[in-house]
Amino acid sequence: MSHSPVPDQGLSGSLKRWPQTLAFLCFLFLGASVLPYPGIQNDEVFFAGPIYQTAGVLYTVRLHHHRVTFMLLSYLGALKTWLYIPILSRWKPSIYSVRWPVLVLSAATVPLLFYLAKKVHSDRAAIFATLLLATDSSYILTSVFDWGPVVLQHLLLLSSVALFWRFAQSNRASDLWLGSFFVGLGLWDKALFLWPLGGIIVASLAVFPRQIWLRFSRRNLALALTGFLVGAWPLIQYNRTHHWDTFRTNTHFTFKDLYPKSTVLEHTADGSALFGYLANDPGAGHPLDPVTFRERVSARLSVWAGQWRVNLFPWAVLASFLLLPWLWSTGARRPMLFLLIAIGVGWFQMAITQNAGGSVHHTILLWPMPTLFVAIALAELSSRGRTGAWAAALGIAVVLIANLLNFNQYLVQFARYGAAGSWDDGILTLSKRAPDYHASQFYVIDWGILTPLLVLHRGSLPLEMAADAVMSDQPTPGDLNIERLKLQRPDALWLGHTRDQEQFQGVGARLDRIAASIGLRKQVVDTIADRNGRPVLEVFRFLPSS
Image (cartoon, rainbow, N blue to C red; front, side, top):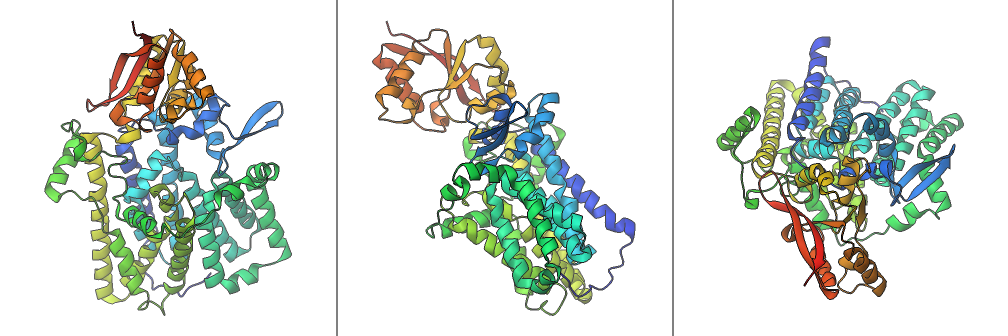
């Protein structure tokens, strides 16, 4: 991979370092500012379930007299589980022990992006790229809360690309092996790694065929395959023993969702995708006044600047695309063309995959490629005379300000209206009160309660999901009998959401009907509210009607 040199931009060594340090610290500061607001969400801690129980784990292997978890789902590996075993053994599970490690890991992608942007184009592109990424609401929020999960996907992809780039320049065997190993780990972590990886492979073959051919040899092929197989070995082992289930059950395609998925991509880029999903909108009611200094400053900024529910990044992408013909004969052409193909191929794969690719935690897997695309265009523009320099400076300043205002709006809505839906912080209150109920068994009737409690209490609470009878209007006789037996336990308590907060609507009403059919009635023991005072969870038991 090569490009024409960009004119010297006159930056000293220290001036080249401080922007990436600033971007790294900015990323950590912004992420930490929203970290405390939402409660623990089910998918956010799904990876930690196997640390405390083996029920529900898809695939384990016996190694040295221990059962080792390899796969959580057919497309989701246990890499994050392995990483968190030492963390959660020393740091009690909480919003901080769950979120700070992924925030730091995600912040590590900032200097990685700086390195790549500098190598493929210039110092100025590296500065622009890292500042844009460090202020991107969608990237920060999906990283801090990592319910996708996406953090390891970003880190492993960027690390592998950086190593492959270094290998292309030096032919160092260790870079090729380690880069391939990271690719294998990425696929084991989550098979959707194939989406951005596929885009990068196609783009590499299209834009840099000569460079690839120069490095192609039996030795290098063997190194790449060996590294990949070692990294992906748990995934390969699972598929080898399960008829290649990862690919057989998750590769169904359709073209009917192209438009709605393109809308999700747009909202991911403009920073609006997570309003109403992570942070409640004003319609949720029960607003709180700002309490801390940071909340007061944030609220005043929102009043002064307006509610920035969208940023200007999509316009920056469009402007960069329109600049490409003008920059065709410059050093920006090949990296921009590479990124354009990689983004297009990566998104097309998710767009045609059935039952996937339609959420922000899918589209964000394309990042930071759009960020780098814009950064290279602006950096190249800035080297085209004084007019270009002023235009680029104005462009990057406007986009960065809009990014920060957009992020500030999330902070305002978190502080005033709380976390939304399955992210409500009532689960933290329930976790604190649970031991005081002295129940011999907790039966959970709705999604999003069991796994957070399991993790927060390190598996010490007697938790069990209710039978499938509450999930269907026409339950089987067997499921009904199981549920009736549970209902007749006088020492058991039941956990569920209030009716308007149910994740699976109707589960509470179905349970009440089953209880009534055997002469029992519901008695609410406790109602849990979120920090805004909205009732969100219920603790209840069943007693004889008479």
